[in-house]
Image (tube, rainbow, N blue to C red; front, side):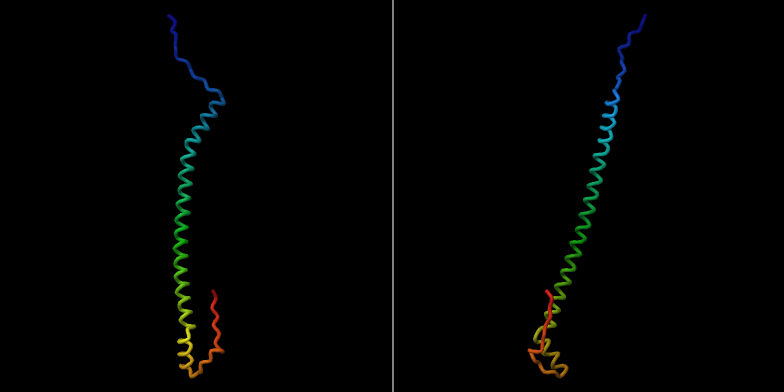
Length: 100
């Protein structure tokens, strides 16, 4: 008796093998790329928050220094310093240079 086998081997063409290989590569590459870009975005956001905090701190320092300048150039302060050193107050001789 001759055995009739119904099983047949599936043969893939070379182009089909390449397509399946590319499909597998894409199925691995796309999620990997997604995780990588999410990581880079997260790190960028962290750096941006650090810079914002640093800028806010510097703005507070600048505002404080500006207030100190305003106090130092006030008329009362100038008159008291002039009196302290025995000088007379002459408004025409006083020049205030404040950069904005």
